Length: 113
Image (cartoon, rainbow, N blue to C red):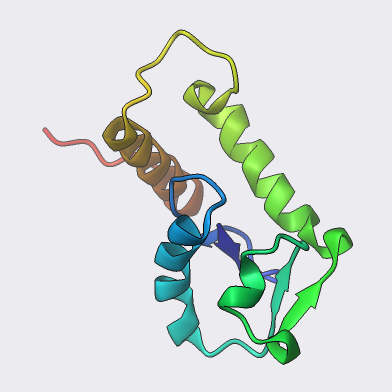
């Protein structure tokens, strides 16, 4: 997940594990933004993509990401770690997240009539 620390909302996200393959998909999206620096935790995958001079490794600054993860889990029961109530299909998960992010950003859910 990618966020701007000074603005609310999620800028980019990818569904997957914390592997280099998953991060490569996210990196493909965010590397073109030409950020001054990236704040990460000390996960060993990040230095493979982000130069050391462009990366701040500090768990303290990750609270914004953790807050967004908490907010997603609050609104979407399918993101709870142990739930039997919802489909775990990746397509339904992506659509649910996109719909929630649209609602949180614009304040309404688009309905097709």
